[in-house]
Amino acid sequence: MTQWNAQLYDDKHQFISNFGGNLVSLLQPTKGEQILDVGCGTGDLAFEIAKSGATVIGIDAASSMIEKALEKYPDCTFHVEDAESFHFPTPFDAVFSNAAMHWMKNQQQVISNCYTVLRNGGRFVAELGGANNIQAITNAIKEASTTLQLPYKAEQFPWVFPTKEEMTEMLTNAGFQIVAIEHYERPTPLVGEDGIRNWLMMFSNNLLKHLTDTEKETLYAECEAILRPQLYHDGTWTADYWRLRFVAVK
Ligand code: BEZ
Image 1: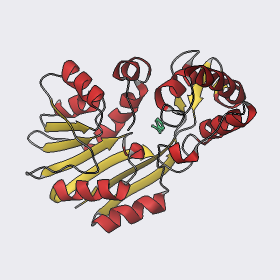
Image 2 (image 1 turned 180 degrees about the vertical axis):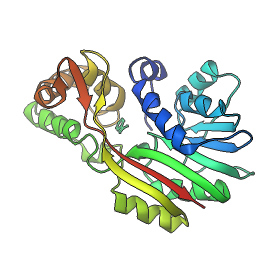
Image 3 (image 1 turned 60 degrees about the vertical axis):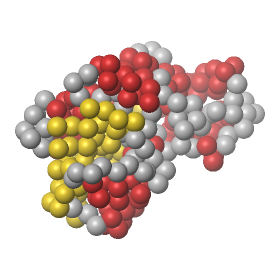
Image 4 (image 1 turned 120 degrees about the vertical axis):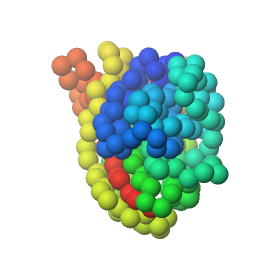
């Protein structure tokens, strides 16, 4: 399982929650609703949703994230739960998920679990990395591995980036009616001169877990050199993100 550094996540990757604010508007939470935030990270969006007067439960498989969320938002409810196996006794009016599902290997199971915990008519509003996501970054990791004669282990690739068609099929299989689904390119600015290095340090741990710290450092530097012409412009690193966003109803 991915080990998360919750402090680095908050310090250098605030853009994840910032972009998610827009998804909260799409959710349109209202006072009195019961809402489940799947893969809530350090809780920023659960807190944002709770401002509407809705009751929110945030779940995340990483205990470090949940500890941080509880520290930041002690009045909100957060639990360590794996999205592939969670159960709740009372139904929710809505399930929300931002930038989390692409870390989940069995997305069909996750989607079916979300269906099960919704009341009839309840909505599922989510966004995740879609097909083509971080293609330049993953290509650079492969190329840098070859150049440096380090092994690249495809079986350690930790993400699933579905196409619109694949997501449509998974939602439909679970029983959802799709209200809207969109696959779009969303170049994402990273913070600071070390933006791409910080991104790699934060997110590529699983993919590179077979390397020593020194090998990883060399690989980061090589990736930085490969990616600079593509992703660094006017003093800003921009990650080549593609999003898949949908609203579906039970
Ligand atoms: C994403 O939000 O698309 C993403 C974040 C970290 C690793 C991979 C993808």
